[in-house]
Image (cartoon, rainbow, N blue to C red; front, side, top):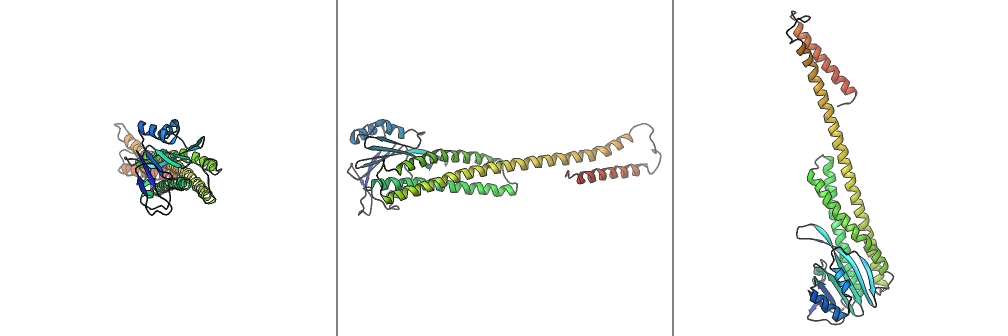
Amino acid sequence: MIKYYFKSLRSEHIQELDNYKAGCWVYVEAPSEDEIAELVKKFGLTEGHLQDALDEDEMPRLEKEGEQSYIYVRFAYRNTDGDIETAPLLFIFSGDIMLTVSQIRLPALDSFLSGKINFATTQRAKLILLILQQVVDRYDSYISKTSKQIKLIRSRLRGHEISNQDFIDFVVIEDELNEFLSSLMPTNATLRRLLLGRYVPLFAEDQDIVEDLLLNNEQSIEACNSNMQSIIHIREAYTSISSNNLNRTIKILTIFTVLIMLPSAFYGMYGMNISLPFQEEAWAFASIVAFTILVNLLVVFIARRKRIF
């Protein structure tokens, strides 16, 4: 799908054009082979770079072919199953053209089409930076939600209410954070190279935007690392608590076993069909019961002194 959007500084609303004109935003989503061939022919693009944008494993980077700059980044989105994934996005900047190429719909597109963001397609460099800003903000939003989820699970740890599902969620969260990190860290290098101005000409205001993007991106990376550490600490804490509870349970069961076995030994001896001391005395049974109770109390006393339970 190829669409042409145009909005000048004086325009109030964005227009969708039937064909290309200078200063418009060429939006390309999941292009077919014929559409790729059309783009290559119309704008003199490198077909290999367009194909790279459709590779789901493509990483952020910068390429320059003559006067054409190819800027690859990855943006986060929620798929139909509700899971968070990342996908490549390609910016092509050259002469009077600015194209975006992606395999799936760009989440930031709705914000631009609805007029929530003030922009002009004629300001091509600034438009690229505004889209990048939306990409970085979306990462920040997803990371903030992840942080809240981790804090919720951590609060349940205090009440020993963590379930197996929480650890399954941790695995999913770790996968998401690792995917974020693998996208954000190369993006940092890409933004630093953009600051040089060799790929996209930047005004002073544009350089400030790139620097803000760098700062926000670095904060997102730090947040990802912090969340990863929190997950590790929660897992280690739960493992220690579980191990301690298991040891405590084994100790208590051992004490109960001793308390049961000692009386059984004495009662078993006096239950044998042989002659035993004091078996004819009336106070023999009461004495045996009292003795076993004293022995059990002694065992409990020693266990408490040793802090076994």
